[in-house]
Every structure is written in structure tokens, then in C-alpha cells.
Image 1: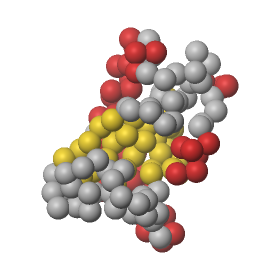
Image 2: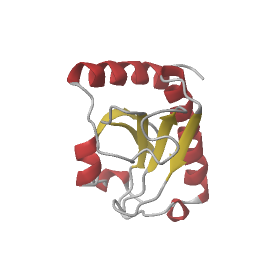
Image 3: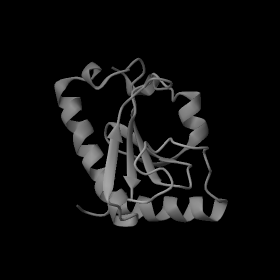
Image 4: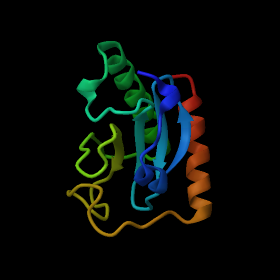
Length: 139
């Protein structure tokens, strides 16, 4: 698999902002005001499922999910982290890491419940800066 040929799905490109590039995945912030929401996208074209990755890359993926989860919880404390790799609409392999709190706007339903509310520009830039710091912090 060649990461040089990687192309991000246009829907992910439209809804997310790049935070960091880890060894396997790009970590992207979902532009969604209701929740802290990260999306990890392995930089390989043609993948739809975690099982499409080799065993070593699956291990790397979970390490990167753990790093992103720790960073998200450090910046946005929550009651529960929702992890998902559904791919029903966007077939490109990507994993969602969503910080959820009891009583939030969609609790207990999925984070996609309700109409999407993008972040205000200032909040988007602040969230991106704090998450980048958390991702870079030694763990």
C-alpha cells in the first residue's frame, strides 16, 4: 500500500480539518460544535475496513486511536468516548472518536443525531490549537 497516492474522500475533506499526521493516520477535527470529535484516516487509498490493514498496521491504528482518545479527553473531558468505523456513507476507512457527556444535545443517541452545527471560526481555531498540543504531548 502506498501512502503517496492517498486521496481524502471529499466529504471528509469538507467536514474536517487536519490536526496532525501520525505514522499511519491523519488526525482530523470534525467541524461540529456539539461535541469534541476526531476522525482518524489511514493514508492508504482503497481501504474500507480495518481488516483491510495488515496486522502491524492494525496495531499502529489502535495505538493512534489511543493517542487521539487521550488527547481528546484531556482537552474535552467527557463521560464516554464513542468509537466507530461505520463507513455506510463515506466508504474510505476512517475512525470516529467522539467525546460524549450525559445530557449533551444528542444523549444517548449517536453523535450524528440532529442537524450539524459547525464551530464558529474562533472556537474552531482554539480547539484545533489545544488538540494539536495534546496530540504532541508525551504520553
